[in-house]
Image (tube, rainbow, N blue to C red; front, side, top):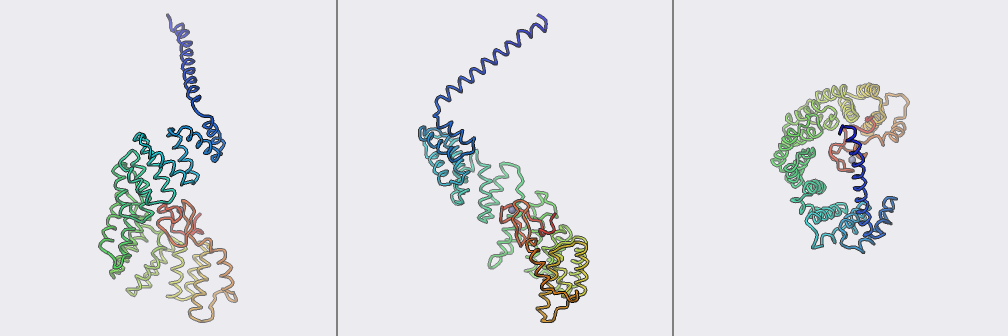
Length: 406
Ligand SMILES: [Zn+2]
């Protein structure tokens, strides 16, 4: 038989086999569906039409008719949770767990669902307990990730660190916030009464080691935070030059964070009667890396050290290079505050201008721009945060005010 005639038999044979297979599948599906109650299809239909309320009613009916249907209970439980009906979700998953005949894999699944219910309901103690039970199961990874979040929200940094270490044993995934956990530990030790400095230093050492291992760049937010805590320890120990070196490191390695250290840097230079050098350093930095926070500090220091003309000269130049409503507002604010302090008539460099009125007008508009903003959730804050209070993400704030962001 040559090649072409062989195909003439083979192709119809393939069609016949396909037809038989399809018939077999359809028969099986039909026999299975006959066993399902109508409510099941009604429920499905409601789900497809995005009517979850009615879908739930239909599924609850099915669940009553056939209490053994575990998959349906899982579906119902997760529907309840998604809709925020936590009590009902918890009840469904608890009733699944109470079944003695449930296979191990489904028991673990139900336990995981219940833990998620507790977490979403904000019952952190119970969620922690439920996830802890799952650590050694097939849900171990998910449980550890959830436990890290729980310990973090409880500010239990020691256990958060332990959970990250357990996670690392299971999977090689980066946990960039680990550096911040050590920083938080260090700050808590420093804030204790009396401060536990040795403990803070130990935590800081681990933070540095973690940053190195994660190859976090020296200009990263985490490295700035470590330098700031070092500076605060040095400051408490009256190690002025060590503290100065920490601030200078931030200026060199993470220039955009200068606004966060500027005020303290000036105070540091003042301690050694070198205020002018400190100010010159900041002014020079501002020429290369202008920012509103830095502008503010430099302007006030110039005003105090070198008088109104020099300060306004600097401000005019800075505002020309980077026109900014907030900059102008801060300038006027400082000017008015200074006049009130001195109880002298206002030396306005703009003859005849009513600075109070001008400032009030500008301030009305600049207020909403005077905030740091989270790039993950958009939460706005007046002070700088390493962790967003809105979405709990780490390092989502740039050290720049809204007005300066594109
Ligand atoms: Zn956020």
